[in-house]
Image (cartoon, rainbow over all chains, first blue to last red):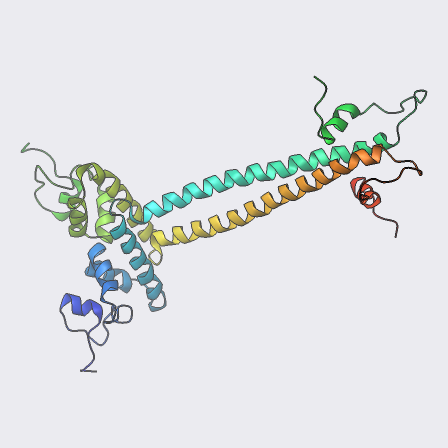
Amino acid sequence: MGGHSPCASCKLLRRRCARDCIFAPYFPSEDPHKFAIVHKVFGASNISKMLQELPAHQRADAVSSLVYEASARVRDPVYGCVGAISYLQNQVSQLQMQLAVAQAEVLCIQMQQDSSAMQLPRMVDVPSDDDKPSSPPFLLPNNLAHFLNLSPAS
Amino acid sequence: MGGHSPCASCKLLRRRCARDCIFAPYFPSEDPHKFAIVHKVFGASNISKMLQELPAHQRADAVSSLVYEASARVRDPVYGCVGAISYLQNQVSQLQMQLAVAQAEVLCIQMQQDSSAMQLPRMVDVPSDDDKPSSPPFLLPNNLAHFLNLSPAS
């Protein structure tokens, strides 16, 4: 295909775009910025080496990740992608903490509910004064006050 | 300092390590692997350019992030750092979902508790048959059964 237009990489590097050019499938001439950015960060020779070391079916993904990484480095020349990783790691830690708190709260409320439910029959079936308790007394008054959302008399 | 030993970068590149070598403060000769890895991924010339474009006080952080990024790319030649970002983004999404569920559960239990607490006084203070209800009746029997954890008679 003698008349084919060079890929974005060969255009930028001002060289003849061979039929088996390793860049051509991933850097079309219509999108010159895509190659320019990875070239600026990784260098054409390194990208070529990296692609050659990969099987053909993984090269498109590798190019995408290299473009993403290079864009991040251009946006943030100090931290690049690592800034995003650090931000996400913090977010994960915070979410794990919030989740642990929320789950503990669920457990706590459920335990309160369970203990209230266990004690309620005694509230309804109030023993008369002459009834002798056959089992250890529950902490009924406190719990009832709590359940009714009443604070104990101060 | 004529007798000073070359930094890891100048050693690898087999060049004289100048007194103002841009790599020397960050790539000591004792740690040749650190430079080798960024050189493999970014190329010495790109690293030198990136460092020159940054103020001196940000260069150490930039070198750390470049080393981290290069190590990730060597470990995972297809996705590099971007693999970690993608993994963390998934983790954040899952945690946000779990947190939303847990918080909804807390709210739901609290609402159940609140409505039970509002209805309890009527359970204790049972009206006699000749009392006329002054307000719309609560759904007392169903709620009591639920509170006592009894299923309705089938």
